Length: 317
Image 1: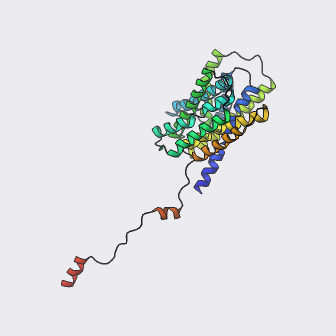
Image 2: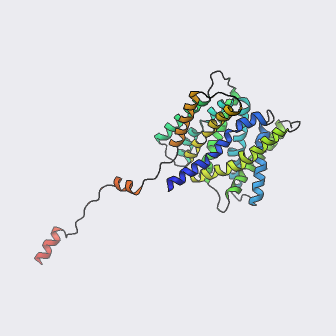
Image 3: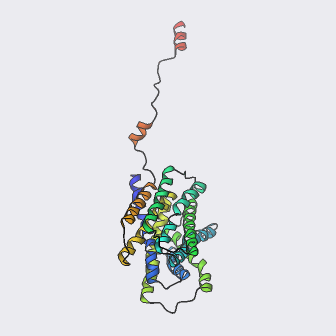
């Protein structure tokens, strides 16, 4: 039963990276050009304020700064770096760099969550990175060093956010919607002054822009982060990190379906390798009672007869 629950939880949690994989297509096709701060704020702040209004509860005590840190790592900094990398790099290259995120989580989870680094995790990390390389790498692609650094920074932010969310948990009496609203609001508010300072306002919003922002707010932020934080609560941090490898798979499939990009045999192999890496990264199923019984050391037969000295003493008496 426990293993079945883990599978269902992993499947639901994996929907969030699947939605985030569409971010590359939405960014390049529907959003205003070169507006990473605007894209991040519009993705986070409106939905966060709605969830705050529904929850009707603000952080208390230590959770003011914890919500701020989690909002920056999980929402503000991560999404800004994601959009920035998407603007400056081909989507596949950005996804390939972001695939290093499980490696960071394996290390951070060992340091801060006491999750043991297992050989199967190292194998899954290698397979995941290799699969994304097969899926996304193009030898003719030009690399923008600033875009590469942004993608690496985004991977580090996501890894740190997963680890700290798992370590701190959720305050007692605070629902998942409210907890998500705290982080979305904090992540959006932190970037608001940078947006006003560094970016110009767009001349106007087209119908495509409105559709793109609505998609990011409803699916890309509110719904996806709710299931993502739920998964972090119920699964090991390392297992959640491997689910994020679904993003480049979705990005590649959407590019094939909507942008007339090719889908080669190597890319299909890469998808299979990524799927195997995700499966290997999930928690091992618990042992059944029969397995525990067979693996237990044999019992030592204890005689219920009195020991020899006591028996002799009883006869002599």
